[in-house]
Length: 447
Image (cartoon, rainbow, N blue to C red):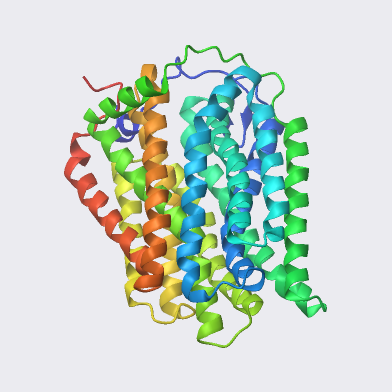
């Protein structure tokens, strides 16, 4: 067996299940190509929403709540922090409920709840009301997040999941790109048409709320209605956590846990602080209005998300062709260079930030894809749910640290501080990966 086959845990033809085909993927569980089209629309729309809400936030904090720019780092970090706590609390509930009522109702309900949060977001007249709207959105986002992972497992045969995950990253990139190229520009467009900043904000949020509600309807009618029954005997959360933590004795699983912390933290850093840094610089240093600054920021973020969009399928293919720890190490090196390189950025609208943005975009999606495929390779089948649960838990801790610590450092030290911090975290995990890489074997070859 070749090294790439060993690294990828390749299946023999006898082990490969027969099923429908879609864009080179082998489907499973009775899923059709139409179901996959709707699934990837859910990926696109979900990331579009999850990037829109935090990246539109600086506009709302300035024009609606009139919070000074010097305090917006902590406020944004706190909103993200409490939102992530809700997601952590809800993912187990949504996963368990989906085993009883099906995946399709939970995914559609998640979008319906997110639509409620988006509709109420601009109506908040205080920080407390804004937090309530954000937490409502987080409840729906938790359902979306857990169903994405579950539907990949339900709809796609094991040997195609690396490619399927890369394609999911591609559609995620399209969603994020639409946010920065179109949605963040809407307030400026509405103001140029004669609306006040507040009216422009309302119009933007109402458009997003309508899109979210429409997506809930599409998912209800478009996802697979003939789901296989899910009757696994579920363990207690305490037993799952114990099994997942003990599984870290496997070097590959432990490394994937560390990579999840970095990968999810990276996403939180970009979603919470990238737009805020650029928008603050535009208003405070260049004298722009908030809408103009966010439109200008969208150009830089668009470059970042284009890099993510184009590299996602490449990382998906890479993880099926080389040792998966090496693939992860490559993305961690890009993360260190991209996030750490912001130390040298004085003008976030300059060429230095563009170069960092390209590396950030590539590593942002690369770390997600390679760490997800590595944990799938290393997870023993009998405790796979527990292992992936702890994997997601470490990712959630990364988001909490990025949100809370990043917000404090953003206001107290410098705007690049959250990026620099996670660049250093990426370096630590990269060194770890280099040290243990030669000792990690796929689980079916391990003792």
